[in-house]
Length: 101
Image 1 (cartoon, rainbow, N blue to C red):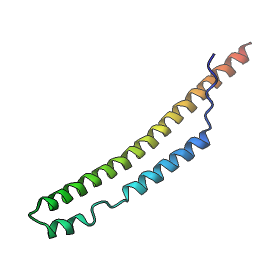
Image 2 (cartoon, rainbow, N blue to C red; image 1 turned 120 degrees about the vertical axis):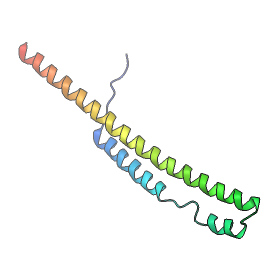
Image 3 (cartoon, rainbow, N blue to C red; image 1 turned 45 degrees about the vertical axis):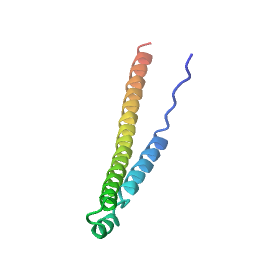
């Protein structure tokens, strides 16, 4: 028989706050601050083009990671709200059944 799943809403909300902070911190990372200078110095070279592409790819990856943290936080909040709603509905039904007994 499976064990009961116990959720501590306060801990989940703390996790969500941490995820939001991490997403914000990750989103603030500047990845391509020096690539424009490198590209300007090596304007027509393959190295300059590679630096430009790498800076753009890194910026996209960091932005995507920040968005994923935000999505995880939102999903956690949604799941917690569903669990709390189901608990309240079950509690109300059980209370009603108890009154009728």
